[in-house]
Length: 178
Ligand code: 5GP
Image 1 (spheres, rainbow, N blue to C red):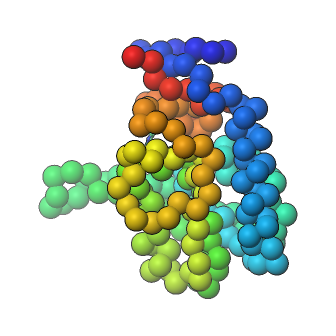
Image 2 (cartoon, protein in one colour):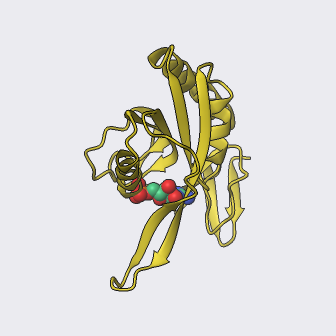
């Protein structure tokens, strides 16, 4: 399936599912090497990272736990825009090595929020693994340690990523057609 329609928009296949699977294998191998002998907590960011987190975690051979948090928007009482917070923390991560699993890093706002929260929770170390990274959109200084694919600054869906809630089930990553 090279092209697909979601709601009112057309998308073209950009990264086939087989390439994603191969790359995730390589990322897992790198993490297994880097964290050999360590006890690690993986922290998946819902909703987008659920497929990436599941596929990567299956290939991890460390002593590892996995937990998920979700980014929730709420209307701030003073600010006009929406404020985001992470909800669903139920794992004791103090003193742990944490690897954050993101579907995509765009501007890096989300990442900054997550890393800030992890520091408050006094983790020993934080590294970031993302399936997709948009280097031209990235505005932060936090290093993104494990990157599946660097992509242009275009809107993508599939493999966990949505357009208005749809498209997460596509096994490949698709990019918006003009
Ligand atoms: P950031 O905070 O880095 O700007 O954005 C991260 C979040 O924005 C991602 O977790 C994702 O939810 C959303 N996002 C950024 N770019 C895309 C994209 O191309 N497609 C989709 N579906 N979501 C995106």
